[in-house]
Length: 124
View (tube, helix red, strand yellow):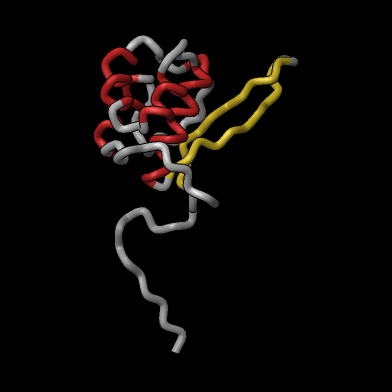
């Protein structure tokens, strides 16, 4: 996969967790499914200028200027989670004859060891 250059410098993990918490999630390791409608979009005035400083100017004008809706917040989530090995997974479900799109934060490689312990396997 080709890595697209979005940031001048990657946003720190503390800022990423602050953004996720301000939108109603528990942080980067929150495994709950959510919809765009469940996101809290009222606290973005505090974190939006902080995050915008990390983006390249041409990308910041594209993603931060205009109406901040659920779809744009999901896109921003994808950007800020990717450097830390996480992504937003999407699933569509039919409930009472209406299609709903559900999102979940998941590791890019779900089978990797997240504890930080290095493991060596010897088959001798």
